[in-house]
Amino acid sequence: MKSDIMAMHQYSVSGKKDILREVVIKYIDHFYPNASGTSAVAIDNKIEQAMDLVKSHLMFAVREEVEVLKERISELMDRINQLEYENNILKANASQETLAQLTTGGSNVAAAAAAAAAAAQQQQQQQVSTAAAAAAAAAAAAAVIAGSAKVPPSPANPANGSVS
Image: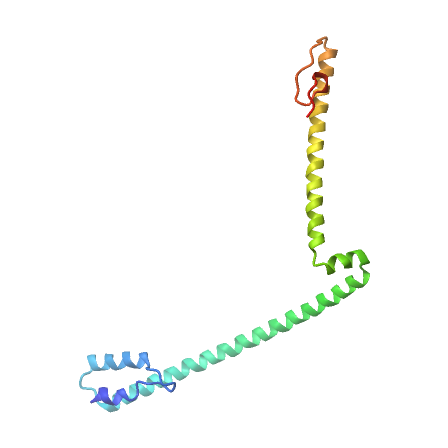
């Protein structure tokens, strides 16, 4: 009987079965088998009140979050406007060559940066090999000065015919 009364209350306003209500009804049926239909309705009303309270708290929290997000959006819009203003100033004061590089999408800039990196690496390798040759020449000079006519072998020593 009480299950029949509660069966018509098991669906929420949206038409979906309310799991919380089902659990409470099963709890009441199990622990209070002699409960009257009126107490089941009272419990149903309490559940409805609790759900309304949760709903109002959630709505309050959502409204607060919306306000915070509105403020953040406003701050970001101000920042965008500031950056656009600075960008316009920089474009106005930039050379035509710089503007041409910007309008090509930066592909030339990336290629130039890669070429500059390769040139810097090649220059560094040349400096290392020059330093090695200088060290070998200094060692050869020290050996000659010390009275030894023998030149120490080195991979970059022009005196023994090897050049790197």
